[in-house]
Each structure stands twice: as C-alpha cells, then as structure tokens.
Image 1 (spheres, rainbow, N blue to C red):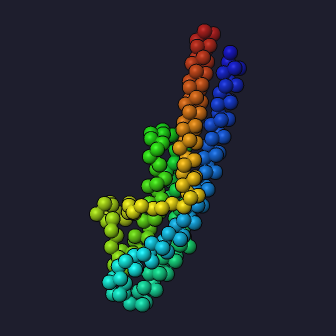
Image 2 (image 1 turned 30 degrees about the vertical axis):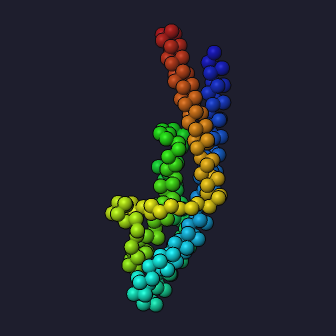
Length: 195
C-alpha cells in the first residue's frame, strides 16, 4: 500500500517539477520579450512627451535635451536589467509552494508597469509632468505608470500562457501536498500500531 502511495507521490512530484520547469522557461522568455518591448517603448514614449509638451521642450536648452535623450538611451540599454529587476520578484509570478489567489489578476502586469515607470523619473527631472501622478504613490520605489501599455504580441502570448500553467501547477501542488499528508498519516499510524 505504501509503495503505491510512493509511486503516486513520485509521479505527482514529477508533474509539479515539469510544470515548474515550463513556468521558468515562460518567465525567462517573458522577461526577454519585455526587455525588447521596453527598449523601443522608452524611446517612443519619451519622444511622444517631447512632442506633446512642446512648451516644456522649448524651455530646455539643447544641452539639457541632449542630456535627457542620453538618459533615455541609457534606459534603453538597461532594458534587460530593468526587466530582470521587476519581473524576477517573487510577487510577479506564482511559484510552486505559494498560494495562487486569483490567477486572472496577472501580477506581471503590475511588474511591467513598474519597469516602464523608470522613464517617469527621467521625464519629471526635465520638467515633463507625469499625467498619472495623482494616481500613483509618491514614493519613488513605487512609481507606477498607469497608462495603457500596448504589449507586443509575443508578450501577450506568453502572458496568456501563464494562467493555464499556474492553474495546472496549483493542481499539481495540491495533489503533492495531499499525498504527502496521506503518507505522513499512514506512517504515523504504522508507527503507532507497531509500538
């Protein structure tokens, strides 16, 4: 009886490990895709602010505008590190062993917004107001860019793959936990019976 339970537990753990491996691949692909997205998004968004807020742009010297553009270029060059910074946080993804409260809430959306908000610091430094400033926390580490981000198709596809994998992982985790409890209970009973 215990051998059968061990086999079930082993099989369930293999399934959980497989799902965790697939999720790790998805996470890294999403991080890489987000880095590519941010690289072009920072430039496009900065340019849109420069054009839309022409009065602020006119008030900047050529030197200041070049300095701002260099900072945006530096952000673009750091897009992989920025994506890693925000998208490797444990709160951004479900991982086996943690609770999955609402799989449709997509905590990665918040992480991408935070990564995009790195541009806000640069824009505000040069006098461009964040149009979403009234709806964000004032602490710099929690700046949020609330505009609608039109993700790349690759990001959307990878994101859409997150929910089914997380649900499958949650089911596999629940089965592993159940079988471990069952095994512990049987072993405790056997020890009691043999005492």
